[in-house]
Image (cartoon, rainbow over all chains, first blue to last red; front, side, top):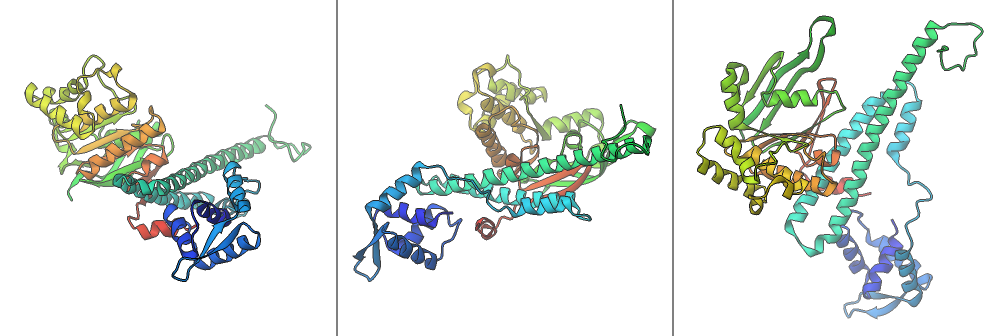
Length: 201
Length: 240
């Protein structure tokens, strides 16, 4: 998640101070990715160092206001006009766990998949309910939060589909292994190469 | 809440002897009024057998099925047919509507077959169509309606009169994703209004509308996912 670009984008709308930026960010994303105020000010310091924002006096109550510079404005436009690059797959603990589970002896892979599927389904139920409840209120200010919820629903659904795929792939592999073992038993020939996939047809 | 459907120790075996196939093994399931349960599982896991048994279209090899407290094994065939018409509504993937009848006539037909006067049946049909949001389309024929609208007619037919058990078999299979969500919204709404809904689906996003998702595997209930109903859990999960 780019906190840097999110803060710049919020400053493109109007000058704001740190707590306002945090509140705006959380309101627009339904508090899905909570920001601590320390992160906000550290990011503002870096943006100021890079000449993308500048201090703009205070609001009369002692809050330091920040506004975008021309370079900052260009940075935001550039962010919106370029796709998010997924050159490095984000670290996915579940994919790593399953990759290890299938390659290590003694791990109940089917059990790992099913436990995850139930947990993911519970999340999907909760997101769906949150979307239903939020949609029912029909408030314009919930639009951004509903889009975030849709994103969570789609990614959780994709995870469940992937788990289904893993399970059927595991089943195919074990069936193929069992069939291969049966064929090997039927066609034991000492002089055949060991990497043969089975007996001749 | 009252139990609308109960399956107690239900087994269903097809065939005999060496060729016998156990489709369901010792299945226990209760669905209360106002509850929406989704059943998921791979092809051949027993989902359709479960739905047929729950609606009294098939009989268990062992165990008992209760609809609104009545054990189905205690009923004659005629009594069973009457109970089904009075209490159970079905929704199918391909709608199963009569193309030569209007929406209102499709919905009132089962009531008239059950001996209700035509006028009363029509009034109940209008009520049911209103509950699924298409009262204005009552006089349309099926070829004048979209797939989503036809499925709403099918749901209206499933709830017409005083039916409290809705059994839905892949009801969104023929619909696009957004229309499928709308249909889930209608089923959810019926459950919230007091019906018991059992949905068989292979779509996780549709199963997620249910209060409980039951996983069936090789004829057995393997697992269950239940909505947490707790917003703080939701936020904790999504705090990526």
